[in-house]
Length: 217
View 1 (cartoon, helix red, strand yellow):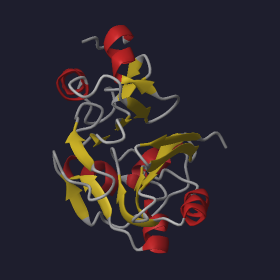
View 2 (tube, one colour):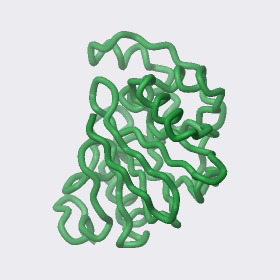
View 3 (cartoon, rainbow, N blue to C red):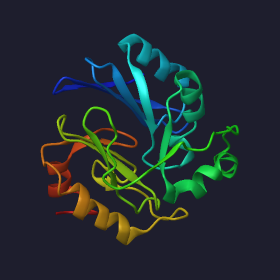
């Protein structure tokens, strides 16, 4: 397993690929309070839970950048094991509720998911590690990024990639929305911030503003 390890402003940030489509799952935790967030548990629940145990972290929320199957498949297992509530933007409930159809489309064994416990809103305080949710629609209607100012870390899901942006040709996608989300919300953040993407390597806001051929500043 390839794992990126970032120790920024004392918070623990671990990102590693999980599930059938190798979505980047992130665990961000406070080593003092031992509170942690699990972001986009798209599979391999046992790997996620083993890391939490190793770091002696208690999950206070399971949060999702969006509800495509590769970002949500292990949400139920993580909730069952930890008791932590599930958060999702309401705009993606049509995808969450359609998990069976998504699994069939991609040839993935069907997974039953509990309903989210809470809906994410723009500027939603995540209650851990100084995190806040930023609604960044375009890849999906409910796509949400998670900004950790103290750590200068943005978890962007499938909205922004290194030298790329998320697809907008799937149900609910909107190209103008994703461009607006990146320019107006993501590019307004600290240029030196690390961007953890939904798949593949991380990047920085500065790098994407200067060289992303799809959306430049």
